[in-house]
Amino acid sequence: MSNMQPSAPKKAIGVLPNLIFMSRWLQLPLYLGLILAQCVYVFHFWVELTDLIGAVFGNAASLNHILDVVTIDGAVRPTKLTEATIMLVVLGLIDVVMISNLLIMVIVGGYETFVSRMNLESHPDQPEWLSHVNASVLKVKLAMAIIGISSIHLLKTFINANAYDVKTLLAQTGIHITFLLSALAIAWCDRIMTATQNQANGEH
Image 1: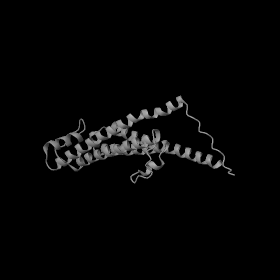
Image 2: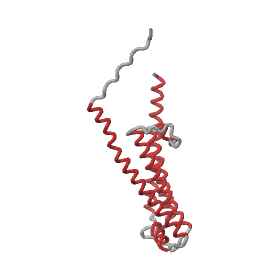
Image 3: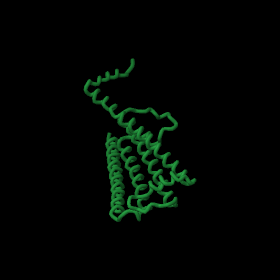
Image 4: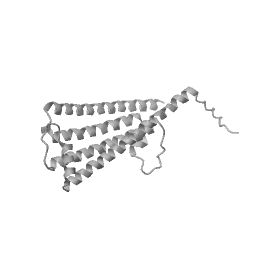
């Protein structure tokens, strides 16, 4: 005679709770919009890279575009490509890549966390961070990505520091420090929450 107890029947989800739960799909157009924004960044990246290569090979139109891009309002416009000019353009390209990475984290991680599972466990290209992503992990990773983007902007400012006044330099530095402190606070809160949860699970 079997000792297995019959499993309790699953309780049907009410109409209102089901409607509220299904409302998560309203976020889908937002993530599709971010994918379009990603396409814009890819196009912008290749336009800037093409102009940089054209400027290196002496194309006048490409050179003028690159010099216009790196010239700050009120600063003296350079007349040719220099190491600093190339570095500013390359940092701009890196900035685009890092923002693109941020978009990927928001699109993939946000969809996986708040909308629907992607079932990528067996996919060879599954991102390592996606295997244990949750709202807290996503917030920490987004904060770190924002710090990286802020670091690139700050480096671009310091390379071209003579084009900025002291107030602007101090303001950008202060904003970057604020991002750092915010990321530390988020990581610290996440650590406390994880420790509390582990302690509660241990008691059970």
